Length: 212
Image (cartoon, rainbow, N blue to C red):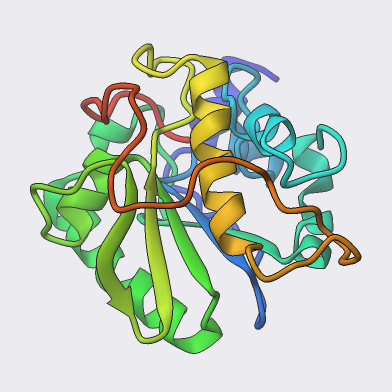
């Protein structure tokens, strides 16, 4: 992949991995250039989304970005707040994030996932006008869909280590699959009961890197 090819991917959009009946719809900030060029969400090698999914028990093994179509069979989907690809998330305007929040709300109302997981609490605050939001489950709902603000999995988010990132993903998984018993297709993550407070690791950081 050449710099020219990456540059050509700027402002492209990326197809959602989505459908009805999802347990969790993960929502990145916007596609990165590598994701837009490959057509795969979270394709940048330094992004920790796919490792965190596996480490938290959402997937039976570590998926490659090219295996994203396997997600709906596990009750999982992927979308973005803002559709256009950039090299850095801070290239997006506040207006784009707010407009993306409105589009995301409409998308959730259509597909009605059990949980919407926004990957980046700073982006969540802007998109949904909730300046005091912290990582963790939110009071806000979209219809029957509950919302969880997750830390950004970007490799630039030094506030969250791979271990603490996976722990927060696991808290979401425990909530999303809490009704699945020992004989179900997915084992429930053990741990503390889900509350409205974030885990001990620090909260979100300023937008720095697009999600792929």
